[in-house]
Image 1 (tube, rainbow, N blue to C red):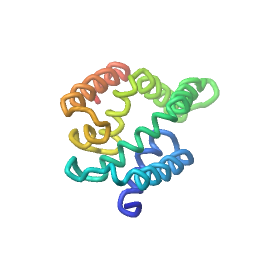
Image 2 (image 1 turned 90 degrees about the vertical axis):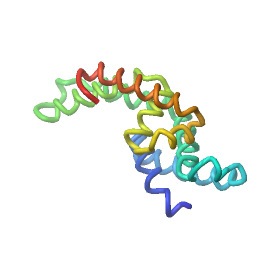
Image 3 (image 1 turned 180 degrees about the vertical axis):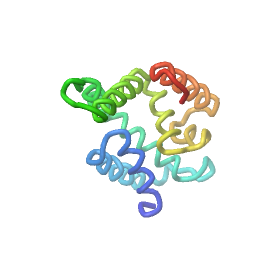
Length: 153
């Protein structure tokens, strides 16, 4: 199970919280999956969305750290960097502000879709929410980020 899915989970978690914390989150994901293997129901779908659900729940516990990191990026002062780096900082600040403004569910759905590249049904299984909720939540999240960034998403 680890060999098959760890890389995908690590990529998703790294995007959310950074490399060091992501490794811990993924390790905890597999520990919880092992401890709760009797709760996995193959009739509800593939194992990967179930693992993403566990991983996302663990990431929620680190939400404060995630928000602090996003606010730290937002807090970078443009006068401390020059040239293309300044433009990159401005873009990161704008993206961080847009993500921080989303609700927890919107952020989870958007990142599972955009970063983990899960299908709607897989996101529904991972977060244990109805398929229609995934679709409407993703639509709202994309609209809010699009408005914040001033362009298509």
